[in-house]
Image 1 (cartoon, rainbow, N blue to C red):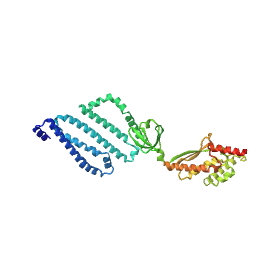
Image 2: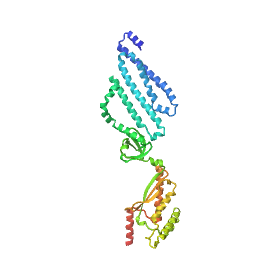
Image 3: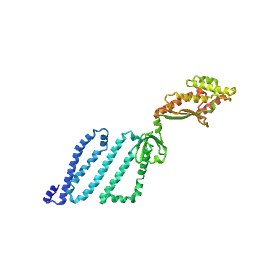
Image 4: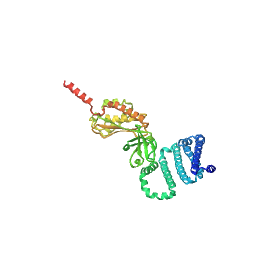
Length: 411
């Protein structure tokens, strides 16, 4: 460059024209070097890095090599800076800013690669690090901004940092959500409150589905209707939400549904009904043991059994409860190692609620609903065998039948 400069000056060209020609030559040189780097060196590096299984793939996806290659043209300019003494100061400032920005983008890519590698580990579902990666990016961005400003004004970064005290309140306002999200992310991770793949419910935000992303400021939930709900990370700390992870890990999903029994159909068991119930496979042993227990109690206490109100007797509702319990016990889809009961809830204006409380051994939603429906299909079908009726509010058809029957009787 010095030789070319002197040669052009000896030809009698002005310094401005000489500088322009040299700048043009430098741009051509940079262009040639960039082509060599992109077409030869980067391709060679890609083939070498691509041999790695996961790490190499992530490096290529995040364009780490491509961003590093942007340093080469700047190095060429730096090497020939002395050839432009009149612009040397401005060139150094520009290169400083350029190196800072390129370095920032390279750091971003490296952090993304680290996150990708971490996400391949099993622990990533329990302890996501996206929030920490985003905080690191913010810190490096702030440091880069300070470095660029110090280059432009020609002052040390320490000088700028000393003036940040007065702007702390403004920074807190600007980065309020990020700071709240950082605190929330640490609490969520430390207390293991949320993981990728957890099914959560948060009615306040209309969220009911699987967690697909946990970031610094937000948590994304994919709802069952395939919509995406975005929840502020700090809301998971300040508000309540339901996490179904315990159900998934337990291997059982709860059935808790009631059958409303018409209270007018509840009665003591007649001899005819009792004989019929003795033929029911799952009730044989139960009725036999219960009869012995009741007879023993009545005889021991000298109960006059000629009146049904005296002593102990079997009821059709009691036998139906026992039938449901034994039916569940013999159902291969019910988790027998978890709580299982059939209980009578307080009666109300709609009859006597009989609640089935059990757990299926398949937690998948579709399979669970199928098992639950099969159970209640069966119970609704057999309830009349116990001389019981399901409560149902009158419909237009019921009123029509009633009036048609009255009209026939009047005739």
